[in-house]
Image (cartoon, rainbow, N blue to C red; front, side, top):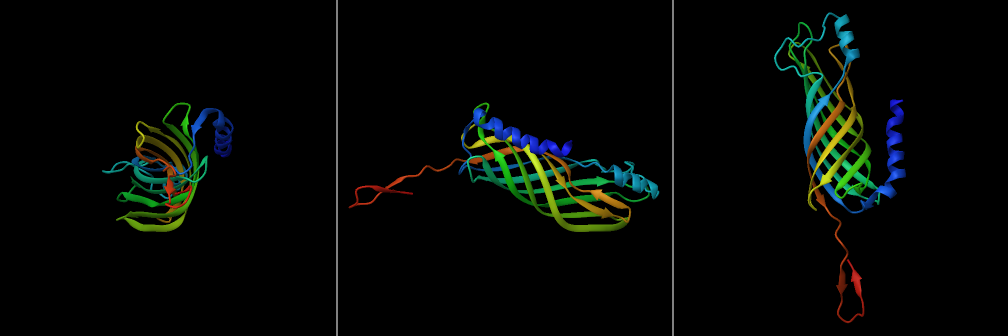
Length: 226
């Protein structure tokens, strides 16, 4: 059922969009910068660690799992009427503890490129909802003073949705929720999820499309467009 949610959301937005939206996406750029929380569930890893006598525990300072922190910067450009090309840079961090070992730090960062289905002024002026799919390189570092570390470069995959709200022509705020897939084998125990659900909020800067201008050329009757 969960696999059907994203295609269903895309289809719903495509079907309902023409009746709800007024603003074209074409040639509009935006930059969004923000951060928030990373929620990474690891039930399988925790069970395998417990079987090996290394049950997860929080009896140590600076343990954040399953919650962590994340930050992101997103660059989008409206290539077509409904479609935005997006490049996102991100980083996420969490710390977790296994029985008998010092805390682990888990850091993942990378870049994602993909497409977002979006439209401006949906339902009310200034509201810009979107859904998207992205992929790109993901670098993961998991380390602890008590156990061998794990480092891996992999192909990351992300599905995301969210919305921006413009309160001026240039400025707005946004909320973004995405699921990022990434996995690495830790301490000879099991594979650990190093992606998870990333929830971000922050500031968006918009770059409206520049209207074409008529260039008057002396000696010619008409102008040429720039």
